Image 1 (tube, one colour):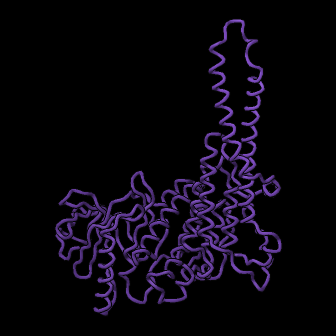
Image 2 (cartoon, one colour):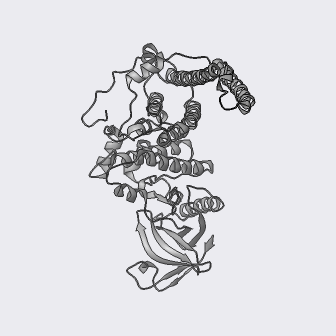
Image 3 (cartoon, one colour):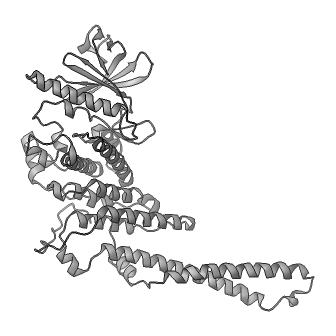
Length: 469
C-alpha cells in the first residue's frame, strides 16, 4: 500500500479522450477509462515496474465534513485491502496495492475480462441456460462466503459486478467501496438492494444480517439472468423502493429448476430467506442436471404418474443383490475353468463328448446375470422411492407444515430428480452416485423440517398469466 503523489499532465483528463497519460505513485500508468459509477471510476492500467497489466479503481472522494469520520473510512478500507492482499480465491480478484493522495484513493487489482455477466446476458438473446447460470451463481456465492469468512461484506451484488477470468469462472468484483462510504449512508444499487436495507440507514456493513441482504441481491441477479428483466422496476427511486418493499416478484417463465431457489432468495423477511448453505445445495443440484438429463427443457416438474410409480415400485432387499453378485462371479469362474479343461481335449467330430451340464450351466449363468441386473434396478427404484418419501409429505403432514423455503427447497430437488436418466449405460452408475451424494448434501444443508404450525397454511396462490406451468 502506498501513500504518495501522482505524475502526469492532467489526472482528471485521463481516458480515451485525452492524449496524456497519468501515472499514480510513480508506478501505475492509467489508460482507457473502462467505466464509471456512483462510487468509483475504473481504469485500464499498466504496472510500469513489472510490465503487468492491471485494473485501477479510483474511489470518488467522500463528501464528509468530519475529518475524523473520513479518517475512519480510510482506515477501514486499508484493513480490508490488507486482508484481501494476502488472499487467493478463485472467485475474488487479486488485490495488489492501495494508493492514497489527499482525498483521492486508488485500488490496484487484477485485470479481468471486461465483459460482465450483464454483457453475457445480452449475448444470450433471451435464451437462458439455467445450468450455466447455476454454475455462475455457485461461483458468486463462493466469493461471497469467502468475504464473510474474512469479516468483510459486498453490498452491491449485480450482473455488472460479476466479471470473468479469461477462460475461467465468475469473479465477484467491486466489494471494496462499501467501507469507504460516509458513515450512516446507504451504498448500493437500489434495484438489487434488499428491503431491509431501505428501512434502516444504520444497516450493518458485515455479519449475518448483511449476508442475508447480499443473498437477496444474488436472487435478483439470478432472476434477471433467467427472465431477461429485473423483478422490481420503477421510473423513480421512490417507485422502485416501493416495489421492492411491497410487490411480489412477477411469476417466472424460464426459471425451470432454478425457480424455487430464486423464490426462496426473494423472501422479503430476511429470517425466512434461504441461507447460504441451502442456496449452495440447490445450486449444486441444478448445476449437475446436465449430467443427469437428456434434452434440456424450459421447465421441469415431477409428473404425478412418475411419483406414483416410484412409490409403488417393489422394494428389494439390498442383501439379495449383494449375494447374487459373488455367486454369479464364482459360477462364471467355474464355467471358464471347465471350458479351459474340456475344449483343448476336443477333436474334430467330438462335439458329442461335451459334458451335458455345460449348456444348462451357461443358461443358468445368463439367468443369474439377468436376475442380478433386475435386483439392482429394483434396488435403485427403492432408493429413488425413499428419496421421494423423504421429500414428499403426505396430505396431513403437508397441512401441518408451513409453506416457505423448506417447501421450495424440497420442490426444487424433486425437479432435479424428475430429469430423465441418460441413455448411455456406461454413465448410469456414476450418475446414480452423483445423485446420491447430492441428496446427502442437500438434506444436510436443509436440516430438519420446521415444527407443525398452529395455523393451517393459506390456500395456494392461483396461477397468474405468464406463470410457468
